Image 1 (cartoon, helix red, strand yellow):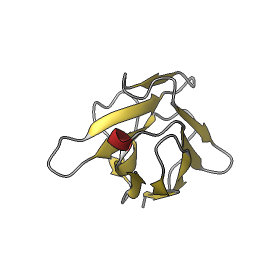
Image 2 (cartoon, rainbow, N blue to C red):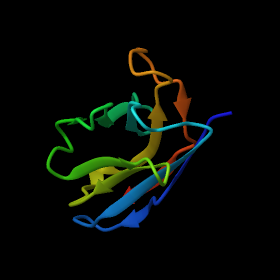
Image 3 (tube, one colour):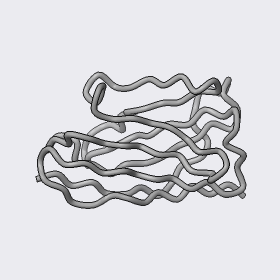
Image 4 (tube, helix red, strand yellow):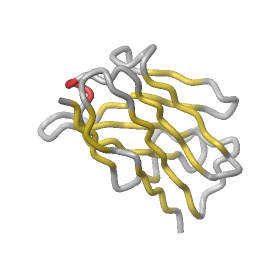
Amino acid sequence: HVQLVESGGGSVQDGGSLRLSCVASGYNMEGKCMAWFRQIPGKEREQVAYIVTDGTTTYADSVKGRFTIWKDVGLKTLYLQMNNLKPEDAAMYYCAARFICREDFFRYWGQGTQVTVS
């Protein structure tokens, strides 16, 4: 049974920073593709950061240069460092993982952690 549990959300001021964590259980993160998404009520879910098997990362244009995704396989944790936060970054943030990278969807999702920027 795969479980992803996010933490680290909270309320920060404009320009502040947060680090989100996603601990995986029942899931070997090594060589896997994982991502962070965010969603505002009434809007579509947006992929903000993605990391693939060789560690290559991609980011949404809106967060490039401010957000960093990485994973610690030994700690079974996916991270998202968010710097210079803006009010438009406020959302529920979710981590997601593919069963295998060649799948075209994310099979596993966390419950989300709320980020508020004022």
